[in-house]
Length: 290
Image 1 (tube, rainbow, N blue to C red):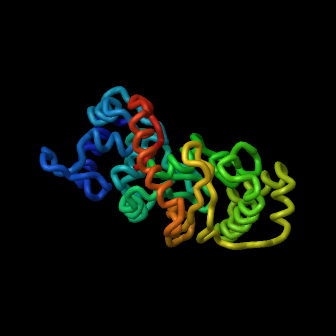
Image 2: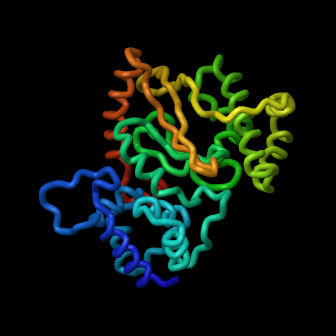
């Protein structure tokens, strides 16, 4: 592990990113042309002290999740991301890892959505990036990797996963998720990762078997959702998806139908999300993202 070189690399990448590029206010008094250390720490979900130790090349040894968060915060391209992982003596993320590289263009668009709840997910419904408003609405992503990181997998294997939606909506979500998964498996040319997920789901859930065997297929481009929020109650919103060129990632964002109660609910959510963000311990090495 080359910690000194890792620190130098982080400093150089930080210097080239402006606050506006990542959705942060510029402010009248800035001593550096790029991002400050505390801003990078905020975007990556790390404490400021922890990030400073990284740039100084000292004892901090970043996890795979933290490296992925730093790559996203600093808008690294795939070559730069892989270099960052090599400096930290970590293997570069595979295509089925939740530390997979997220396209900077998609991250830039996410930053421009302001208080709109939004997240970037894979075609297997693994959450890669959330803004704080999406976390306040949908809950934070599951930590870890593997099949349990997929919302589709958890939907059919972990009953508590469904509590975010009213019971009467569950059959609709089950049908849509399975149809979308079939499209993803075909798009991946039935690779080992997605086909193994299907095999595991067939063993774990009779509901999944019955839906899968219908042969229905439909990419989930948009939908209407009713989300149960612990403070706001049931929030009736539109969910839309914008896809990457290869279809393996999608920017998912949630908006209120004009004139609906959800307009005020999402306005309140922005306040709730900001308050909850401020209550998170700064010493936690989290995978929260910009």
